[in-house]
Image (cartoon, rainbow, N blue to C red; front, side):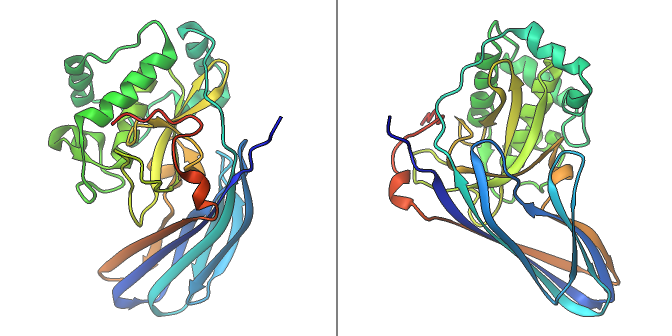
Length: 302
C-alpha cells in the first residue's frame, strides 16, 4: 500500500501596533503557536518582537499554547512576528455512526460542558431564533447531515465581505446586515449547533488558497471554522465559509468556546492614546504542486 506524504506549510503572522503617543509598557497574551493534533505536526516555531520583549510560555485550559508578552519601557510601536512550519496529513472522508441520543449525552460529561453551553460570542438571541425558524434549519434524523445542511446554508445566505464586522462582533450584526466574515459564520453555526445539543467549538488557524472555484480566502488574515463532536469520528471540522470539512488546507492553531478564547493577540497598554493595528499573514505551501484538485474531506459546492 502506497503511503501519501504529508503536506507542508510555512506560515508567517505579523501584527503591528502603532500608537499616537508612545506607551510606557504593555502586557499581551499571544495565541499564535499551533499544537500537535492528530493529522498535524509542528516542525518549528518562533516569535520575534520589535522592541525585544519578555515572553513566557504557558498552556490554557483548552490545551492551547500561549505566550505572555511583557515590555516595561517606552516604545512608539510594537511588531510581533510568529513563524512556523506545519505538516498536515491528507485525510480520508469522515463518517458518523450514531444518532442524537449519543450526541446529546456528551453534555453530561464535564470535558464537554464548555462546548454545549452559551459563550460570550456564541449565545442564543431572538434574532438567531427568527433566522432558524425562517430558514427552516432543524435537526433532521442524521446529525452529520443536519450539520452539513446548516454549514452549507450559512454560506448560501450571507455575503462574505471583509471588514463588514469586527472579530468580536455579536452574531446579530451578521443577521441584521447579511454580510460578514469567517468568524461570524463560525459563531452563528456554533450557537445553532449548541442549541441542538451538539458540542461545538471555535477553531482559529489559517487557510491555504488552492484556487478552487468558489473558495473564499481571508487574504492576509487568519481563518476560523467549527468543530462539532459526532459519534464515531469525534471532533469533525466544518468550514461554513467554504462549504467544506476542514481538510489538508486548514492549518489549526487553537480551539475554544469562541473567538474571545483564541484571539491571536490581546492585552493592555499603558498610555497608548489612539492605537492602530495591522495584521499580515503569509501561508506558503512547500509542496504546492500536490495541492491542485480535490482531496480528502473537501465537499466543494460552487
